[in-house]
View 1 (cartoon, one colour):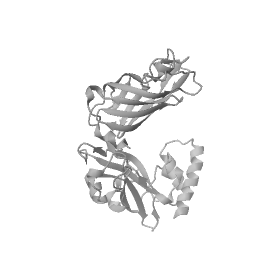
View 2 (cartoon, one colour):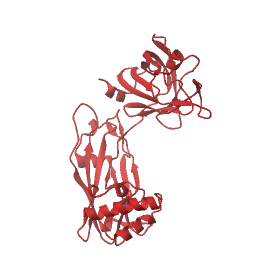
View 3 (cartoon, rainbow, N blue to C red):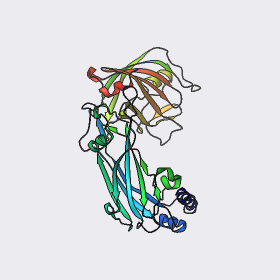
View 4 (cartoon, rainbow, N blue to C red):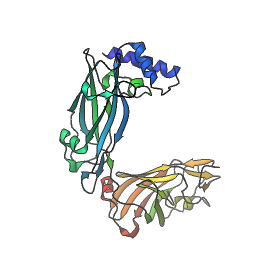
Length: 343
C-alpha cells in the first residue's frame, strides 16, 4: 500500500519541477496515469466556522466544520468503496483538566454518498455541527477554550482491498498544489468577539529599554499617557496610535509614536497580536512604506489582567522593549477571557 503512494509522491515532486507547481488540476490526472495505481482524497474546499463564546461557555449558534472531498483513483473513482472519518479533541489550554480524547469513528461514507463532481470524479460534502462533535468526543462544552481544536482523520478503502490514510502520504500528495490530500484536518476553535476594545486607554510603562546599537537613550523613568485603539472594517482588529506606549518618544529624539497605516492589533482569543510594520526613514516614523529605509514589527505578551488593568510585555524586532499596565477607558473591565494569561 505505502509503495503506491510513495510512487505518487516521487512523480508528484518531479512534475512540480517540470510544471513549476502549476495548479492546473489536470496535472493530477497525469500523475495517476503514469503511476497506474493508488488513490487520493483531495481537499476541494474547507470551511471552519467553529466559534466559542467565553461569556456563555458555549459554541456560537451555527458553529460547524465543513469539508468538500474528491476521491481519485486509477479507474477514475470507480474503485471507491468507503471513507471512514475519525475525530478526537485536542485540549490546548494551559492548566485545569486536560480534555484531550482518543479518536473515535464519526461516520462511514459509502460510495453512494458521493456524487459526480465537475471533474467527473466522486465528490462529497461532509459537515458537522459543534453539537455533533461534542457528542462524538464526549467533552464538556463549558470547559472548551479558544485555540483548542478537533482533529479529523480519513481512511479511504478501495474495492480492490487497498486502504489509504494520513500515514501513507508524502509532502507533494498531502499538501502539494496538485493533490492537497492530507487525509487529516485540524480545525482550530476561534473565539467569539463579544465586545469592542476600541477606546482611549491610559497607560504606565516601565522598564523601557532601547534597541541595542540603535542610538537610543531612555529617560529611565516611568512613562504615562494614553493610547487610542480604533475599530477597522474587520471585527476584533484595531489600529493603534502608539504600539510602543511612548517608548519611541522617550528614547529617540524626534522619532514620533510607533504607528502607521500598516500596523494593527488583532484580538486573537486570549491574546492581542500586533500585525504589520511601523516604518522609519532616517530614524523618524513615517506613515507608509513609500520611502522607508527601515521597519519594525511588534509583539505583545499579556502577563496579567485584573479588572480594568492589563499588563503587557511589549517588544519590537529591533530590540526596543518594556512593560506597560494598560487601563481601559472608563475603568471598564477587560474581557474575562484575557485572564487566562494570569500566572
